[in-house]
Image (cartoon, rainbow, N blue to C red; front, top):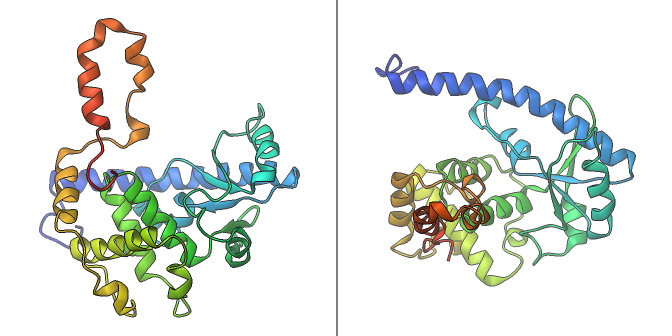
Length: 261
């Protein structure tokens, strides 16, 4: 926007302010990550960080990709210990996953072997291997109906920033239906955002996608429906019967679109 005739427009100024805010939040998140990792590592737990920071680091600048939750994945046998540590009074509550949610159709040992330990200021952080992470962000986006454009941007960025050594055979490993889904996610990033498909195997690049897929995404973006975590819990309406009319609206918000279904 800054190199376009609209650089001084109202929407451009809003984006600029958002960029400033996200840059500040990114610095705060770095501190929060260090605190969470220190707590877990002191208890003998080494988590894998997915989405969020692991995704934002692939963008050209930290202020371009906002995130809130710290998604940490720990082995099932370490989950109880990690939960006790991370919810201690001096700890920060994070989104702690028991096992590798979303990648449960793959060999956990292979996921760990392919994970990467990255240096940063503070404790080093372990992230998923590039193949596992791209599959994870694709499935996360689809599971939530592609309600946020940012999630599709994540798929495009992860696809275009992959290394030359990217293992497409391993990327496709797992349940065939999920592999078909993630292939459609890559094509959706190409169709709507122009993500490059250079080097993508023909079995994926030439895959037929449902005709309703892209129109459903554009319709959702036009509606601006909030993601699941941003909606008022249904339990609230059950305990506030005077707001019974809001229940129908809440049900509409939760009705799955074709992608989520």
